Image (cartoon, rainbow, N blue to C red; front, side, top):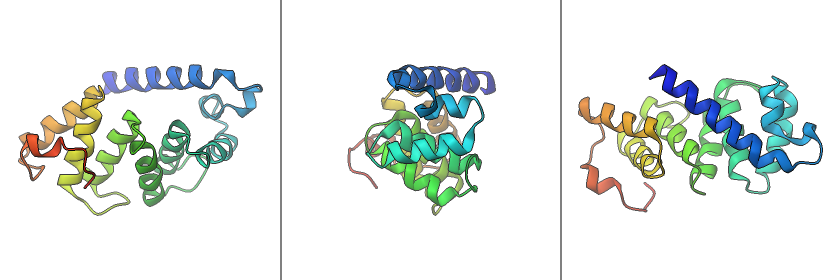
Length: 155
C-alpha cells in the first residue's frame, strides 16, 4: 500500500503542476514551490489562491498544516482547509478529511464522518479511500451500513 500511496502522491502532484502550469512566473506556482521544498513561499501563495476558493490550493494548505511544512503543524486548520476543498469535490481532500475524522486529529474522532468522506472520495475514484472503507468495516467501524453513507448530505 505504501508504494501505491507514493505513486498516487506523485500522480496528484504532477496533475496539480500541470493545472498550475499556466502561472506566468514559476514562483507563483505553489505546487512547484512545494516540490522544491520552498515551503514558506508555497504556503503564502497557496494561502492567496485558497482565498479565492481554489480547491487545489485549499488542499495544499491542508496538507501543509497537517505536515507542518511552511507553517506550524495544526490539524484543526488542516481540517478546515481539507473541508473547504472536499466540499468543492476535491478527491484527495475528501480522503484526507476522512483520515482526520478516522484518527481524531484536529476534529473529534467520528467513524460516521470518516466513512462518509471516504465513501465520497471512493466514488470520485480514490483507491486509498476504498481501502480505508474496507479497513473500517473489517474493524467493525463506520457506524452505519454502506448504503446509508452514500447520500450527498454532509454529516
